Image 1 (cartoon, one colour):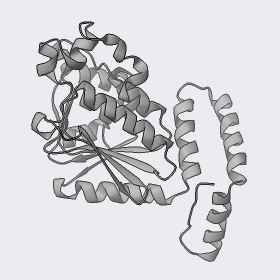
Image 2 (cartoon, one colour):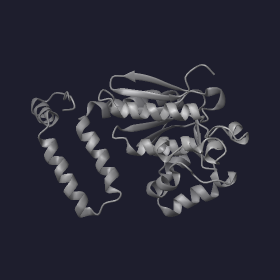
Image 3 (tube, one colour):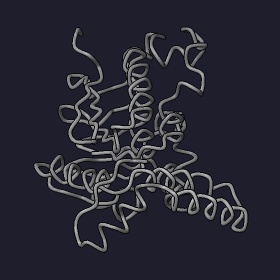
Image 4 (cartoon, helix red, strand yellow):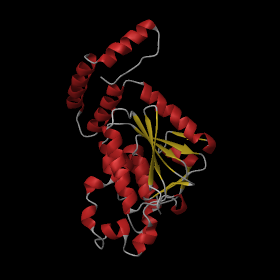
Length: 266
């Protein structure tokens, strides 16, 4: 396929990253994995990008690894099994690890089926908006595998131990309502409104103070492994630094003048 497996679109501080193998339900190949990882890093390094939205083209978000390649011992499946250059797939180059390291907020716009690796990608995003016609497919146990790219870490933290076991060990496909009930997604929206509503969420975030947003995400991440007292110390240090920023001054001034703030990220 000559067209790029990952498409990029920029709109006023919001970068769309679109998985682009619609004929194969956006299943992951080594080429797609490599480009996706590079694009996530590039977005995080770009100060003009304040929010990332990840979605899929066509009728799927991402249906997991390309099982046709894997059955032939090729692609990522072959690499992970040790038959096809496993050295190219260290944990440093797993997209879900990159997602967890990113300071830029990432929203998943789940437009269709998210299965296997695709489900782990969605769980690695900070927020998830789900089309009412989309489904989540945590059928790892039915395939004789485990959530290999973050699911075992994210699920207990998102929904608690018992629910994580229920989702992963039963392996039942979840519709949008079930996904919302479990706490796996933030909001269900009509399919035809997914792009619009996701853009609205992203735009609100992009219009807020980027330094504050970055610090929130960093502190959320670090707080997962810190005791309360240590975490509170880091929060205080962050607040003192933010008080010195031009963004804080703009936030106060715009509030006094009763106008929308114009944050520059400095």
